[in-house]
Amino acid sequence: MNRNTAKTTYEMDPVHMAVLSNRINAIVAEMTNTLLRTARSAVLAVVRDFSCSIITADNELLCPGDGLPIHIFGSPLQGETMTELHKDLTPGDAFLHNDPYLGNTHAADHMIMAPVFVDGVHLFTTCAKAHMADCGNSIPSTYHAYARDVYEEGALIFPCVRIQKDYKDVDDIIRMCQRRIRVPEQWYGDYLAQIGAARIGERRLIALVERYGIETIQQFMRDWFAYSATRTTEAIKKMPSGKLTSMGHHDPLGEVLPKGLDIRVDVDINSEEGMIEVDLTKNEDNKDFGLNMTVATATSTAMAGVFNCLEEVPVNGGSFSRVNVKLRDGCITGNPKFPHSASMATTNMSDRVLNATQAAFSQLGQNYGLAEGGVGMGAAAGVISGKDWRSGNSDYINQEWLIVNGGPASPESDGWLNFGLPVAAGRMYRGSVEVDESKYPIMFKSLKVIAGGGGAGKFRGAPGAEVIYGPRKDKMTVVIACDGQHFPPKGVNGGESGPLATTWRVKKDGTEEQLAGVIECELAPGEFIRGTDTGGGGYGKPRHRDPARVLKDVREKWETMERAKETYGVVLKGSIEDESLSIDNTATEKLRNAS
Image 1 (spheres, rainbow, N blue to C red):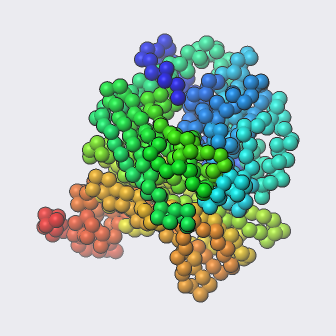
Image 2 (tube, rainbow, N blue to C red):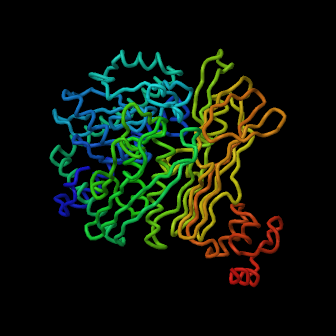
Image 3 (cartoon, one colour):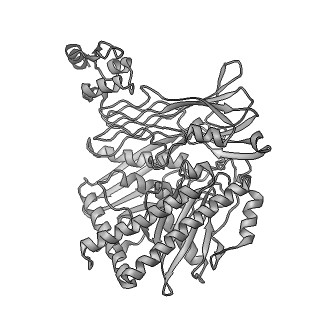
């Protein structure tokens, strides 16, 4: 990160700077809307597992838009690869980059980058990163937890290759993708949506510069970064200084991780200088599986964990300059040594690092940090594949995204339902049962929020949900890569942990078999998968929760009568059915005093 952005004087007046920052944010919003409305796959067009952004020519994040944290923080790393490998950038170029060893997140995230020129000057790069429904993996999933190396993973890797020249496709690259990806027409439709988003951004930026002039825009970028760095410095200075250590724990994974894995995060807050360092180096070396993190994902998750705990500041290269992330080559939470696989670098370990980072700040006291958010791409995020009889037995593949995974509690509020994953922070849309059933030969039996499914606390974590689905006619393959079945999201400062995730196979006779967290299974017609999500951790002691909040939770079925009494120490009388439910204040006071 550029450390020279932390100056405190600006040449541009604040109103002018605000106008331009909002105008650029609107451009990224238009890019996002373009990709959402033109994508082919459900994972993009319905779930919105993609992110658009704009970086500067010298590879600083200028505007992240409404992107996913796991995608956005690493965009400048891929920009650096583009400018280092291609010294001959010209208008009309576009590059496909999904190389996890050169700044990308993981192989399933295809990034399209288009350098933007005005009067021959490279000023910006527009970025559209999208998680592909299929990326050529050796198994029908973009997540391969058991891949021993990148070769077994099998994904097509494009180390920042030119995919358009003079605004025309490089057909060789297109043919490579269409030959090795299971759903070539769907992939090409998604690629066109990405190119469309990048080109929309390019046109709008050129028009913006033509209106205001190159010098004004360059001055804006310098001042915007300086302003953002100052705001972040001030936010850090409001915190106590301290050296914090937080531990996360990943579930066991077959013979590779028979006891799971401890993950350590060290946070050093220097309030006097307004700097924070996150150290991820004290973790184990790369392992022979697909859960190794990349530079992009390790940086992203540490940064996101920090920014989640700061008062609101602009997110860009300027604010990044006040946070340093320390990584180690060949570390499971760092820079992977080739050919170790990073197939799942965006999820499992990343969720644990982000959770541990934000939970570390709670050690400063009751008004700091967050609990851990729900983890695990459980059954509701399984990748389904097979043959669709409705279209001549053509191949289909799609990642479901009906997970809830309750959000973490904070010092001021309950967790957020539909949180999804820590690395997505609720930015992805939840899938639609109706859309999925119309696009794919799948049938859903039920989808419901779990009452009492969040970690209790003064502020409670949000609950997870249960989902049941299976094939409508022919057999279906389901790949699930779920964490959180052994180590739940933790509460902080007296808050309780959220419940564990579970995955079950429901057989034709109705009997159930519990499955491991990471599985590839084939469902026959009449069989179903039943899965439950984790809930977020709680913040503060449950018996410090306002009894009126507990009453409301029970009335609205976020909590149960049993937990109200046993966990929160709130005695209720009456019933929900006749709307007579109320607090027995005398019994509640007696019960809480006794504890």
